[in-house]
Image (tube, rainbow, N blue to C red; front, side, top):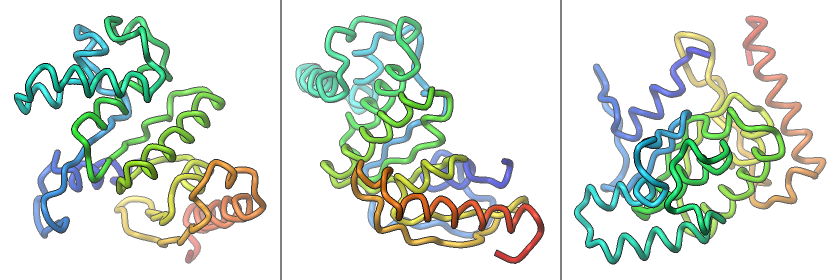
Length: 208
């Protein structure tokens, strides 16, 4: 906690600007961002929240309606378009936040601990959904998480940061993170053990 994970994510997403140095992403990719608290507007309906990014780009209403309708189906939210966020469960709110990010057809998806407040089974179900979405849409995803298991399940490359001041301790390749079945594999469990040992070494002041 406090090592700068969210700040780094916001710098990459262009939400924050660096005080010094440079940060560059090749080209000008379309980006979507999902915040830890979902970032939904409570006075807007699900339809309005999902279509917000397109509305700000002044996309025609018929196209916005078509995109929102498709995403409601993809996120299994059919019938909830006219509901407000406060009428939804945490898992449903997170699916609305994911749909809003996907509505702008992003090439890079930035996620700041998007599942941290959910119960274990809902969290696993949404991890599967995120995995499915990024593979189908061929999206580059950058995820901040405190969860070792979540990092091992979703991250093909896992960057472990040190305590403050934050620095890169280790970049771990994790090629097995490609399917929902990975969670039940021996390779997954071994990767979790490795990540936990790396973090323990940092916590104990040892060299990772």
